[in-house]
Image (tube, rainbow, N blue to C red; front, side):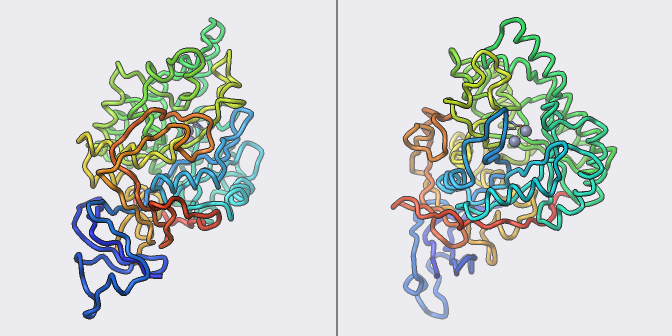
Length: 472
Ligand code: DUC
Ligand code: ZN
Ligand code: ZN
């Protein structure tokens, strides 16, 4: 099957230009001058399918490097399965996800990884890889880390939050980082001081402050800043590169920026919710509504300027990537577990479908360039997590994961009737954005076009990832 995508503007992390893209089977065969012929043949007349991208951007498919399909959390599980979550991703122009396999104290790391393969195999609409959560660092877990790279899992995640669930103390963190440095594994960190948060949360509940808003109060920015600093220093001692997930506080950004200025090999990711939503407006919504936006790290105060600062950090490369931390829960039967005690609200927001559109708004408003949009959502994720070349770029030999994006289009995101995530609400209800995902191609197959959805469970393949390009 040969496809020619004609008339569009091909955008990469470093530039843009009018070009036609020839797809042969699963890969990109050529990026050509518009209207090129091949040995005198009119190309468009000699392919099986022509996609007209006139007036549109042609970009590499989005890579969401932080999702939690079916994650068990707080006595329930994230409501998107690999089937529903990757279908929603495809609708939104994301053609690869990297999800988190989970190991907890007392479990074997490789059993956790096997369980995630079991959940995902044969069900995904787009390609998928795994990071490994290590929730119980002990001698066995450290030994098991040696097998991860061989399994195509070149990054793992630790938690400084959630004592008794995923939490690692400083000694465990240091040992894991030392091991990771030896192995070439990239350490990902949930950087919040969990024990201190638990004290504040208990005090708030005792004082009758049980609404979702107090989730944000308990998870004070100081406790994100402190943990971010501690993670940076532990990584420095271990000589391990560090990637801090879902950065939400401007003070945590400052810690990362200062460390990078000092030559430390540290990176940060933020998520759309920390760019658009706030403690006051969403978490502080009347009644129990705010539960829709309970996630960790929490939404931060707009009055304190975190959101504005985060956009700036994306411009200046103090933050290098945008993922979603997609972890959806329904209000009914899930979020409502925390009525009367915000600590029991399962943490998470669903956004896998909306990341490309939400980040494109940064282009519309002039906060980031078109090239930076592609870099933040596709190219850097590919480089960071060992996929570059295959993913993250439109170039000969790369997988034909291509999105045709219409800047003149419009998208109503978040209205219940229009999203495809398995949720009974949307964290993005009422968001109207410029731009539209017109065509989504994954390894040469059209998953989405004007006629609707053509994807299927099982199209998506497991991505054996190589090492991060950002190891020192
Ligand atoms: N944060 C969330 O919001 N959900 C899942 C886990 C996490 O760290
Ligand atoms: Zn986390
Ligand atoms: Zn997460």
